[in-house]
Image 1 (cartoon, rainbow, N blue to C red):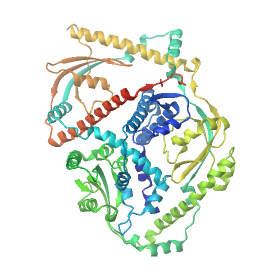
Image 2 (image 1 turned 90 degrees about the vertical axis):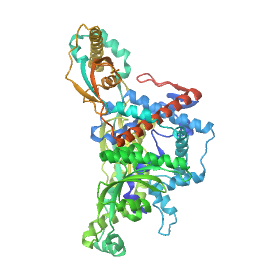
Image 3 (image 1 turned 135 degrees about the horizontal axis):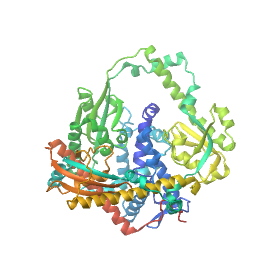
Image 4 (image 1 turned 45 degrees about the horizontal axis):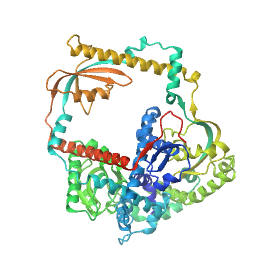
Length: 640
């Protein structure tokens, strides 16, 4: 069992994260009310959302995006006032949905909760050879994630309630073939355009604001000149690798394991696959089953048309919380690891790259791609020795780690102004960092404390900043704990005018130059409409909605496809906020023939958009019914 947990550690983290935290942090109604912060970001049906909660959710959202984007993550582009408002909207929706569930007295039976848990593939795999469910293994699996069975089942119950509350809105959505066909034709169009851009860079040389103007701009836009809290810190990390490095496994121990686990080295063929799951409840009606099958068929057609999109579609559409975030990847497995219909399908495929589906299992309908094959082959002791030693070291490290992490937590508490004792006892390195902010840096939050939102939240807590003592040990992930201490801190605040003068000057020049460019573009468009003059057109562009040229503002693309092309050339003027103006000439339109598979894929996309529109309308109605007061304003002082 513990081998299973070790092998699937990352997958299980994703499973639990996606299942328990759908879009934003799920606190629960009581959770929102019990936070002690006094600065308010919003009030929802009398429930308070504090700025501390908003900051925490924003940091976690930024961390998730950093994980997705990796080295390409740019904090300045991610952590913006606009994104913070979207994060707040997500928190508001969570509270609205929970209020609606409570007021409508919706409930989930224990049987439904058990059924949902058993449909999770990683849990379904916890069966003994005789078919009985291994309850001890289930509890150990949850314990490895820091959860009790009661906590996990409560979170699953809350998740089911939310899914049912939203699912009931869209289950009976009836698609329109005429609308789908018209939309598909429009989206596949190629519009032949010319664009004349009037950008702020063309006018910047004419802008020379006075010192008084710059200072007035600085005072009028305080949100543009905020700096986060910063701290110089020291910290220590205890992880399995550190524990493992001190464990020696003898050749005799490895040989004993090899002889007593001979079946592990006899070799079974293993295959690797990715899947997209459309779930079907055990009590689903015939209509619901057919709808799920039809949706799976549309997805299958889409991935057969373009197999390179399999991972993206899995992340968007798969209802398996354990693999969706990984693009549907299930890793390598043998026949015994999967239910029979799924295993038969995977092991019946001829070659890597084959796609099959929909395949019906007790969980629903699967679209499956074969991504790897490991032929069966036995291993000699010499061949297996390295892996056996690593496995035994890992097992022993995990046994020791629980005790060592407890002692680690006690030591950083008892000697709260130094890490010398814990570093000496556990052979750890005391690390230092300067200019740390509450926003996670790029990195792996499961290993790097400065990329972990929970660690940073604790580090920048009021007590930590005031007392400069070691924070309680934080579990970054199973097998990794850390503690830190603030050495010196600078609170969040606003740059002085002297510090921000050049930035204020640059921003004001950009704003005024954009205004001048917008006026020049609007005047040129008026001249064009009157037939008096043509602007300086750029080179002709064959514009596709799903593949616009790099650097072309999205507003220009949208305007080109909104233009009425009953008569060409059709001209459109487009203000581009903060940048200037564009004039678009649509000279003609080409509409390629759309094949049925693409049409089906487009229909699936329209259905997704329609479901989202219905959900948006539902939340608008909840806002009206229960009342939402947004108090947070980027750049403004907090509301007490």
